[in-house]
Image (cartoon, rainbow, N blue to C red; front, side, top):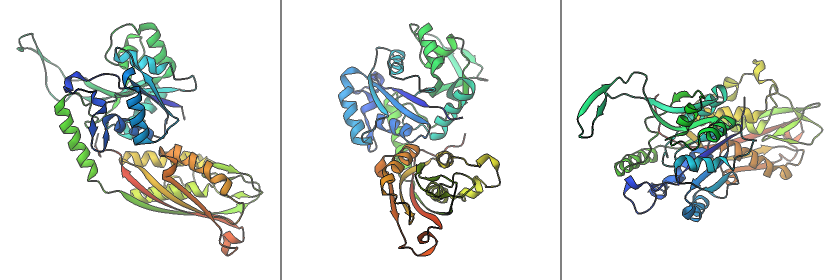
Length: 395
């Protein structure tokens, strides 16, 4: 089941515990402000259609400038002025989300290392259960102290979890909780949902899903960034070919192209998307598309190949990799593909969570030589570069 999802990123606080003279979310971490690393994690996710960034009203222009500089122009990013409390900021974000959104995730602006796997788990649990929160089990012994820092009790840690974000819910459930209880002071959306009697599912977070709160957290965040910088990008090549036949649609790069013939295959036979999938799988060392989506399985009969690409990208995310860029060559005598290349780029860029400039598609002929030249079929080559998206973490 595919549902439209929006993430609200509250980043309107000042972060006084950091002892900076500016909000911590604008502090540079590695090559970009902390907030940018957080936003990019959701730009890369195939489930997220809309990102709402909530900042204080006096930081709107600063936020717009850094978002444009570091991520480019993205129609799916909306900037909203925040409120006094975190929950007020989230509520302001909710106001710009329309009914076309099924799932709303909320993620701290100061958690820059959220993995794609964690985002996906929250999204999927919200679909199946209604609401979910990323969390990790408490490992250390818990002590309760009094006003003079003396231990007065040891707390049983069994069944205790440390809350993280994202926290996700069906839009109507989160709106209902805010309408009924939005005036109550709560520390997170999960608390509000609980008070409204809405069950919340715990899903596995990550030890590296760090919230930068104190100055010492910055040092740890910088170490994580340095570790990520040491990772080696991975390159993959993919090739696919399909026969042209009658009574089939011609689908390339997720776009249906008017033509008298279409491509034969178990799925929609989108030779371009298949080559891209194979290139990504090759870069991961994960075999090929036939291994993951065999033509002997009726589940994939006539399936839209962009759906297969989403699953391949999710596999890459589970390895903590995302697409950096790709170069694709379609070999086709007819029809003329140039008018459709822009739409193909837009479709693939949105699916892969990258800018259109990171997707290059070329169409060429073989001057009527070979099976493509004789218009018996279409073939495609794809080369990809994968980049680390987060640390590999065992959960």
